[in-house]
Image (cartoon, rainbow, N blue to C red; front, side, top):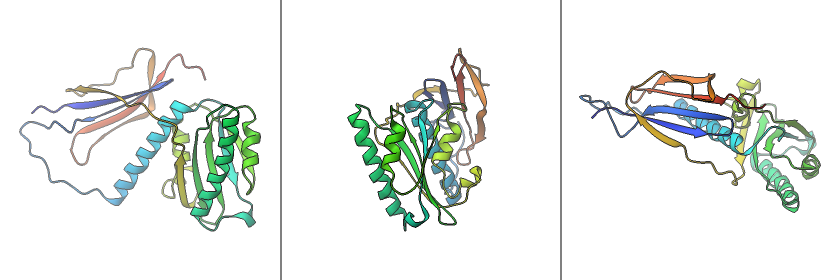
Length: 244
């Protein structure tokens, strides 16, 4: 049976992400399937984090925009939680208050958050949240444990760095010059994602720019699957007429 490849195409407002790999339903003619190798713990962690960042990036590109907020909740030293479960309760209480105020304003609240504790015991929470009128006041009033600071989101880089930042773990935090002991990532459930378009092809060809898009070379990655021995790649195309 002739080998065939699968192409998954995720389309967003300003970009298109493409993933190409061997279709598992097809193999190479005249070859035997190799002995299945068990993935190492490190490989599993890498794949899980890669998927987490990809899904977070897709949510960011679908549901958030320029000038929405990246919020930082910090704790006063005497109000630090004793453990992650307590910190989760603090976050849930604060977001419940914010959600009620958004609802009164006739708006839906969408958010993504990562609770983090450093190796020296300092706790904080990073939150991405959609902005509405007076959102800064609403959010500050909801957090009773320390300071609240705000930054506006910007879409340069297609939210790639932000997706990694909001989902970082003790294993990936050094990318950002941080040292963390424990993290816990959460996102609201009201951010569904569309299924990708699927295409199949036989011949592995050089990538050509789509009409109205250009290849973001920083996103291009091509490798060989350790299990199948076949190539795979993924990359992002950015809209030429995008307004930043």
